[in-house]
Image (cartoon, rainbow, N blue to C red; front, side):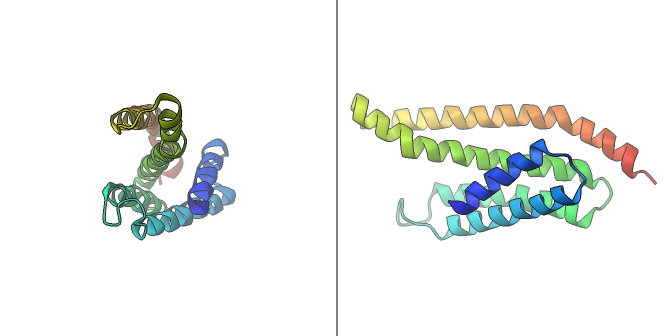
Length: 160
């Protein structure tokens, strides 16, 4: 939980602060390390079903964006900035999706059970699915809106 909270906070800071600075790089490392720790703990958590489950699959799916985004910035090969931007955004969108699912699980379902007597998981999956889909749609909108700006900035700044 602490690693996830740290990654959420670092991600927000990264998005609102200027880029291409030492501060951005340090907070980026904090984000990447926090995400890695969170994913490692997800792989060893079996409280829900006592076996490998869909949460482990989502944790596996969260690894490539983090690895690709980090490695693009770390290696700085030709065309790295748009790749770094896009993959790190997808990593953060996945984190926000996980946050929405967790909040739904911890707060929404007990509320629905206690106030409406719902015992079926169908409303839960509908709400979680709709919220997660909303996070992805909004996130994808911002990624696509800004990736061309990042590419133009990269071409102007890093052309030799």
